[in-house]
Length: 118
Image 1 (cartoon, rainbow, N blue to C red):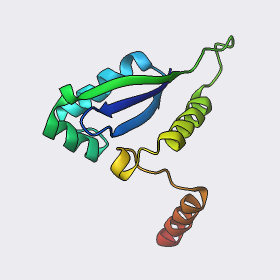
Image 2 (cartoon, rainbow, N blue to C red; image 1 turned 90 degrees about the vertical axis):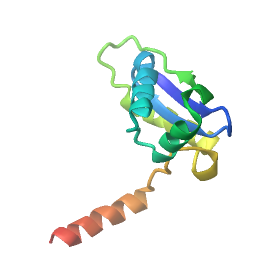
Image 3 (cartoon, helix red, strand yellow; image 1 turned 90 degrees about the horizontal axis):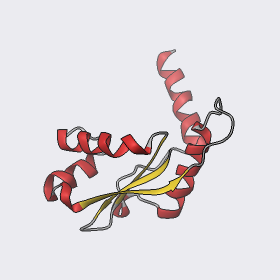
Image 4 (cartoon, one colour; image 1 turned 180 degrees about the vertical axis):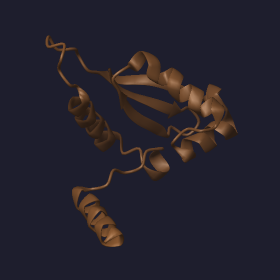
């Protein structure tokens, strides 16, 4: 488990993600891209235009296993992903990720949804 990137070898844009299964994540993303249904539309567009051979799939950091088999790694993975996103800033011209909403933005969305359904 850990953090990975999909690197566009032509323009150095990256897609950063985290996963509990590094062994399977690259197959999943490659399958989505080859099928034309990757969640990142910008990455999908570049993949379609320049071809999959112009992308590299790389592990950025692995998360070591703990002694506790019941340990939940989800918050560790989320924090580690946030650190890599902060470090590489793969947004807009530099990458394919979308910025995560701030706490305040999420609270405003919740409040707006409540007003809309009331």
